[in-house]
Length: 459
Image (cartoon, rainbow, N blue to C red):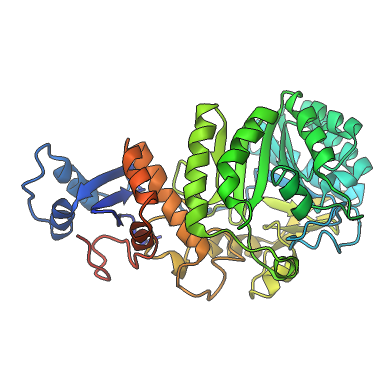
């Protein structure tokens, strides 16, 4: 980690946002103060000593600096991919759901993985057990899901662990299954792209039928279950301007703890379906407007690239020693399918499940994934590098990726700056920034945010 940047500044209208993420420090300063800070000169405008304090922080070592894991492999999070098959035909799916065979994991593989993880947690003195069910659509493997959930709760009771089980689901299920989910699981991430015109357009059933009605029923059932409900919507060019409206509708119609708006990632499927990604500037403006609506109702609005209160090296399980078990018994460090890594020249494997023996982890692969998350050339000059952490390692910061910022970077840089400004009590500045197209472009395309790196002048 030696040499990694930790002091940044980006232009905000006629001022500069100074951000020291490893020092828990941010400030909005004028051009004269920015020049004085970079040049290490006194400033006449520093009446309250604020600039002097920033200069001390600039010269001091970080107070919190994440580092890659070391030592023996130490997982605390298990993912069971019950199947890659699915029961709906999302027009933007790049997980292979509509075409994947409904091949379900052998229950013996799931039980071996669950028991192994429980033994590991007890040996490490942990008290909580986190399990995530993923697919395809994980809940179509009904008998397997029953076995997984009840086996985990049984081993937790026997070993003195507190279970936490969540699932990512499309919500197309019977009312009986939705009631069961609300009773036996702790948290649900439910994909719902909005009102009928968006849900039915983007997420039709395999038989071509509309899915809104059944997903609406599932959402209402889970809302009354008292569990943590996250509503996740994929935002397209068609829906981006209606994000605030959808936020109000979701809050009034259901009882979400969290709403997660994620922008569409264009792929071969989206091109064939005539779907376009949202404009990153429109997405950022609408996300911030939606956040204020959600905050007023006590609902947390999230965007994965900014969802961290502490510096991090990865925004996903990669590099964290998390274990993702696929239907064939492979143990990986990533949710995506192997063909997605291979085309990027990457290997996310960790080992395999050995029935009756647990999970056999290859130490060299675990170390490989730990080191993978450190150096990302695209992120070197970006002030978001300790919060966004480069986004997806496969789609955004893969090996030898171009260093130019992408639309993902643009919206992430803009939202991150707005959130920092709001924390400083600068809501009016946020409004002015989001109303100024040229100021937004200057911010997101600022080529080098690092202070004192010699590659770009500030102030």
